[in-house]
Image (tube, rainbow, N blue to C red; front, side, top):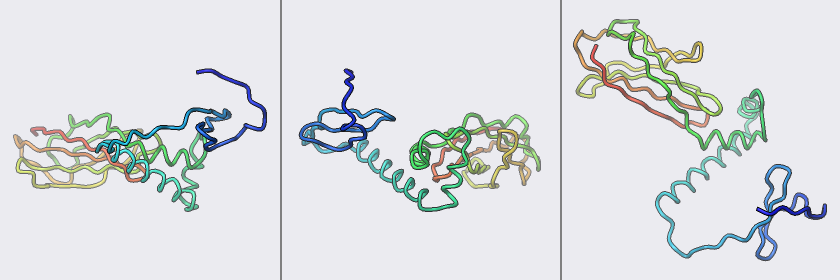
Length: 186
């Protein structure tokens, strides 16, 4: 990509001028050709991505309008970019479940199920569901955050030798969710 030093007149310019589009990238003004339309119908993936971005921009605007939400994003340590950009990025990216630790779960009341999850901003909640082999929910509830992990203590006992499926769902501030499930025999 070629670089040119333009006069101060072009600094901060945005929009279209003839066949050239001007954009801001940090402190730089970037000029490029106007995008062409192909006349082809959009694919399902393209439409889904546009909808995802539309929801993210709506969320970003709602953060700017809500003082409580805005304060959450402003308080982020090492904040880079605007509150809107941070909220938009958070709305686009879903949380990630890194690990589901079930070794200490033996089917007794109080046995822990540990979930390690992260998000580009913050994971705000983790829900754990234990289902039997037929898919019937045996128990479900929120995990508690502590020491970089989320821990759920079983509230119901399961007979030894029973196969259950542990499902976990992590949610971030905009409501994006990630799920993971694992069958285990207790």
